[in-house]
Amino acid sequence: LQRVADELVDQGAAAVVLMGSHARGDAMPESDVDIIALGEGAPYLLTRRENWLLSISWTTPAAVRASFHSPREAPGSVPGWRSARVLADAGGVAAELQAEALAWTWDVVGDGALDKYVAGEIAGLAEEVHKLVNLREQGNLTGAAVQRGILSFRLGVVMAIHLRILFDTENRLWGLVNERLGEPWRSTQARAFGLGDETFAETCMAALDLYRLAAGEVASLLDGSQRDVVRYAANLSSSADSLVDS
Image (cartoon, rainbow, N blue to C red; front, top):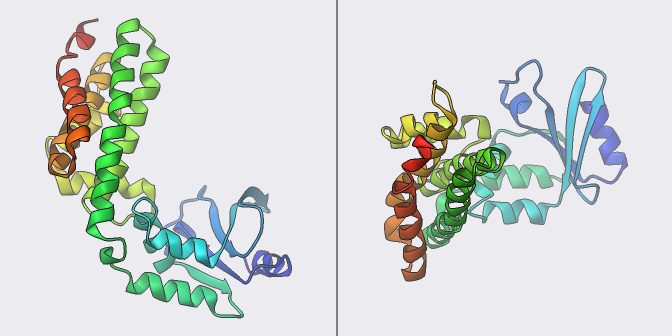
């Protein structure tokens, strides 16, 4: 890691930090090594060095600070920087960013921006509900599987932000949301991901049910236009029981 850090500094990096599972100390045998280089370079490079898979991302201090203020990025960026290990930092910029992450609170983003983001995401996902219903009724199983996955995946992220959950890895995100929401969210999400003996149609219905549950959780955040869109999609979900029989 130090050799890689030195190479990145030679390429112009002002600082290099190790993030992710290897920084936290919970890496698995096949976990990649997440390295952030502060400076101007290729945004992302995945490469093998000896027996390691290296994920090298270049970014700027300004972009990192912007992520601390972003409703979508802050929940992952802040804990990532909190647990980061500094490999090179001659000018102290990485230490400054880590200090800002450690001092960060949700107030940095603001409830207004967070709620607006969540409402917009839930309203936007109504389109995926329409697509899933249409594709399943058409017998387009591949398309329906994709839409089911989009709903199940993105709803977990949106609900984490709604619940003000920080997640240093998306591997833990859905479990953290399950813990906060409990039933029926937990079992519905499991069915949507097909973790039991569900039929394909039942997993599609579970994804639609997951949307209705999320819509109910954030109903108070929606404006008039969003409320109409989300209400129709939620009703469409509840009226799609024929998917199970088809």
